[in-house]
Length: 271
Image (cartoon, rainbow, N blue to C red):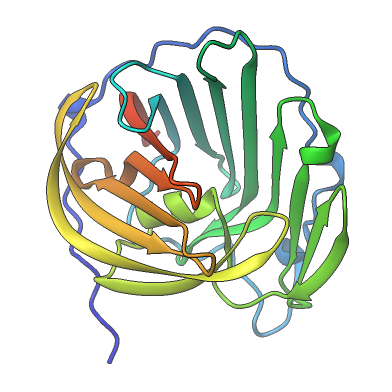
């Protein structure tokens, strides 16, 4: 039997703080906005996405979260992150995440930029395009295009371009974390996620409610543990009073390295 989703809590606007803009970094935006597929928007078949449907919960129209990044539970910051979500009047969304890290005893700044674009329906985020770029190295760029009517997912990297079957409810690794704004987490779940290089099934388990210390105080969260086929572990803490936005993210790599992002500023708007 399907499990009932955890009940949402009404967002508390008094906790919202103004985001401090990070130091500007020069970086090429590799997203080709002119060629982003709009096939899903124009489909008239029975299984097409109906963008006129109202979503059940009024979403944020704009979100900006600033993160502090640490590695291996060290007290000193090793970088910063910033994610913005924008929903326009046509129900199309843009998610941009930029992470800037610096290795120990190194002056080199590593920049990872991710972009997810698509539409929002009553089922939440429906991505049409995803890309990631590591610094300005072309060999480390990858992307995914979602052709929903044809059920085709086009994956592209410097080494390979291939198509795989686009399964229902597929998300990219960025939109997945913000999908919970529209569909609160269940106790256990499974879905397909792509990073532009491959598409794989992941499972998540709710570890219950937890109080988490952040840069804007103690937040009540839902703690999710996520496992992929490579057995890499990701944990996400979703802010209950912030419509289940990710306020803390911890990734444990197969190498044993632990990377943790914790929110230090959050700005949201529903208008």
